[in-house]
Image 1: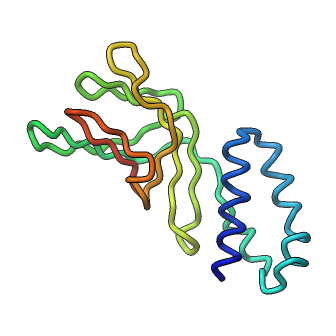
Image 2: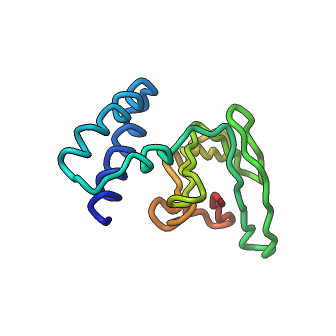
Length: 141
């Protein structure tokens, strides 16, 4: 099971970082190869392959006031919180029956300068932590 999940994570990460949607179709075709290498991989795993999403839920903590703001972030519609502007570049979600996960490529600007431009993961917010003296920004399921 661990090997199966590891292989899927590697394939997904490769396709995401390649940034080419055509690559996703190629990965899906790799099912036969994976099944021949790891015989216990069943076809249901490919039904829950991450799919693109046009929105994610974000949570913004204002560290000074202690207030938490929740908002839906949509592709092409930046959201402003105080001095930062948050823009969703790309997002993927897994099915809830599988590994419940949300992956989002976020660009954060402050005073016109890009201060963060990377992937955020709902299940592991500390992987690519956005560090800022005033705001803590996370994506949610």
